[in-house]
Image 1 (tube, one colour):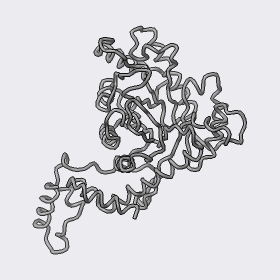
Image 2 (image 1 turned 180 degrees about the vertical axis):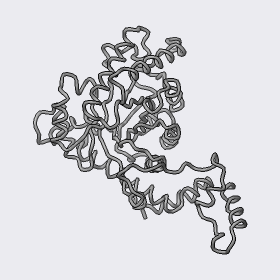
Image 3 (image 1 turned 135 degrees about the vertical axis):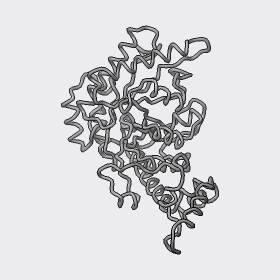
Image 4 (image 1 turned 90 degrees about the vertical axis):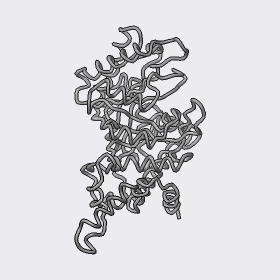
Length: 382
């Protein structure tokens, strides 16, 4: 705030003429040291124009959890609820563009041509291939397992997922959820050794021929019934992992809103941090009640609406390019209606974020002015 005010004074006395000397946002930004400025939105993707940003139209594509399509089969008029049947059901959701497949569970034993044909018939495309390590082999850890043969098998799983991502032209590449890389007891693991093993195994996976040209992202979760303590339990630790793996542009992070809340973090702040590091490859959306170790998978923005709006604001401000994926669990609800609601909620908040931008929210953030921010948000639903 003081930096902006000082810049305004300097601008006013240094530019000749009454009207020309009126401070402008661009003029003030040039006078503020770079490290004191808010990050500006990055270059937009090809389909996104300046007019699109001004109008608040959301340019992102949307995906939703495929396994949710198994719920409430009594509301589904289609045939058997196998993987391709779930794809057909998901295609009925207005606003959904992409499908994320779990590997190996959804794809093992199938032919890429058959899956590609099913996607084309449904009018959908592949978003990502998400690694789910089978418990039977990896219960004691995947990347960090003490047994080198098991770590090699984990590398093989990731390589197989990369091969599928290339076959399906999955826009977000491969997402790895390392649910078994953790521990349950004190004095159970050597943290330094486990970290080094994990870094080495991830590097080995990225360097496989199958993963050439495929983005691979790590989706950390701080705690889970599979591992009460994750070896990568926070955004800061996940960024340290990205640094140590050291495959820039190829290895990054997919953040999950529910996982971040479980870690005691603010999803918007985490998104801004990871985007600033150039490592934000994906984001899974939903909401939770914040109970210890619980991941409720509720509809987006249904519990923490202000936090959801701030998250969308920073995704937009950072120039996020990935797809918006809803990782929710509508077990009692109609999953197609719930997915459609999530798309509408996200697009509505994207529009609100654009309006906040137009109304000068960045100046409010520079001044840490909570009340003006709250009043601006109040006006969004007036």
